[in-house]
Amino acid sequence: MNATEYKKYHESFMENNHGTTALHTFFSLFFTVQTSLLCCIRPKNPKLVQYSYEYISIVLSMILAHTIFVDNIYVMNFVAFAFITFEFLKTHSIADIQRTFSKLNSFGNTKIISISCTRGLTYLMTVFCILAVDFQDFPRYLAKTEKYGYSLMDTGVGLFVLMSGLVHKDVSKESCTSIIKGNSKFISVLISLGFLRYFSVKQLDYHEHVTEYGVHWNFFFTLATLFTPSYLTFIILNMYMCLTIGLNLYLKRNGIKI
Image 1 (tube, rainbow, N blue to C red):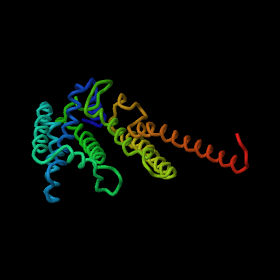
Image 2 (cartoon, rainbow, N blue to C red):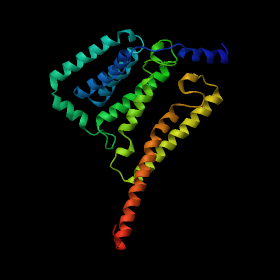
Image 3 (cartoon, rainbow, N blue to C red):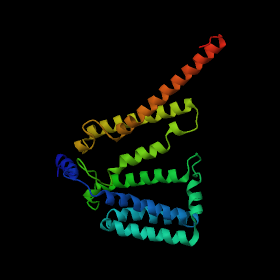
């Protein structure tokens, strides 16, 4: 198989792919959420033991659930829910669960642990899907759909938008200058990554399906476009507020009444 045939072979993965049902897609995501919840509510072990337990419970189970046992995803969700219920009834109350997920994370910022878990799971599932999609053990109906439909990989952009919105600078308590600098840096990085991906894909002649993002577009441009309107709105509102305050101070100092 030469390079051209290999490229067309990979592009054919998305042809006539309409994915699966919305319910199946939901439970494909929900299974990993449940395994993460199980790790959070169980009593903590020593560091190395806890790391091994979380790897088996979250990462390994996620791989198995979307490859070998993908046809039994509903059963696996039920089993995970049964384990969570058992742990909850054994050692926890609703108040304990609320306190657990309202705690600040251990990364030195002001984000609560539930937001950090959401970001971590999004990254984890994204990395897994991007790697697994090129293997035959990963079902085609979990890959991105060609024109319409539901699939696990189609949730990627939506999850990143949700995750970014949860930690977006516009909803923080930082100063306006800090927010503008942070948003400018964030959007600049996205645009740079978008151009980097575009040129690297074209130079390497990497396989890409035109129905995914078109000829010149990609995921990073989508995120940058989504955040630019809110960024510009924030700047315009702050400029309007500063001008209004400045005008009021000028009129007051000069004894001018309206």
